[in-house]
Image (cartoon, rainbow, N blue to C red):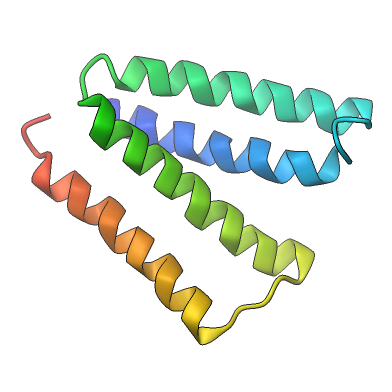
Length: 107
């Protein structure tokens, strides 16, 4: 259950990171409210997950999910470059997340 909470927390991290772009420096009320709500949900779920998971592992996975999701949505939504090198290094982060999950099976 903690891994599921951590995964959802990572998705909400993507939400607030992307929300920063849409909120235009937190100057637009509705996108800002969504950004803040996503941030709060992400933190609450992360806090719950670290009750059962090691903080180092949970934080690395949480930030990894956020980084991969935000980079992917940056490519799709904001026309950021999808170079081979960029995609390679994003995939390295994914392998790191999966690897941490497998070596943390006792949790």
